[in-house]
Image 1: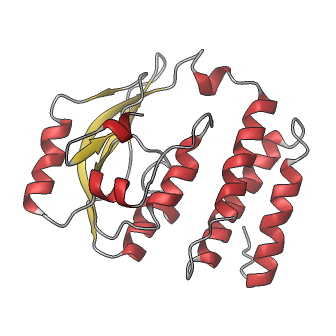
Image 2: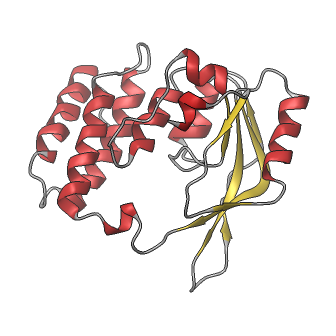
Amino acid sequence: TGTLQAKGDWIYYLDSDDEITEDCIEKMMTVVSEYPGVEVVQGKYCKENQDALPVSQKNQLVHAVTNKEARECLYYHRQVPCSAWNKLLKREKISQHQILFKEGALYEDVLWIFLLLKYVSNAYFIPDITYHYRKRQGSICTATDKQTSARHYCMAFEDIINQLTPGHESEEIKFYGIFFSKLCLSYAHYYPSMKEVSLMYLKYAWKLRCFTRS
């Protein structure tokens, strides 16, 4: 709803549990001023809880100027979390390609970032912490039962396999196949249909000859 109502040139997503630093938007907009072609600006984040000091993420300063580079930095090398938060996004890119969150879905970031990276070709990563992430007991993700979690993961990964990007099918199948197989280890007992979605990935991987040791 917020995305559809937004009128500005840029969009920034913030989870209600979390906080941004006082200079988060200022630092990101500085990048926009210096690099007019940039479509996504990503900052570092730190995790906070009662038992540990904040630990910063280990991604390095990067300016990706092709879709391939953006995919590798945002995605396959997992330099940043698979999430919508802590990214400043060009609204025109979002609206032009209708990169929206699936209504009523949990873990909607998984499908959302998959759709985003079909189109991003200019992304910048600043070396500063701009986001404070909190994992709160009682939140939607922590309070959801295993069966419901598994069902929603299945929905996301089934949507992905049905929308593979032409020319990137093999890398997407490998990345998401490994991602989903790890989820199956934790959730398949609670939701047997996960095995059916997993089999879809295996069949596609066999067809594309993109098996890995992982």
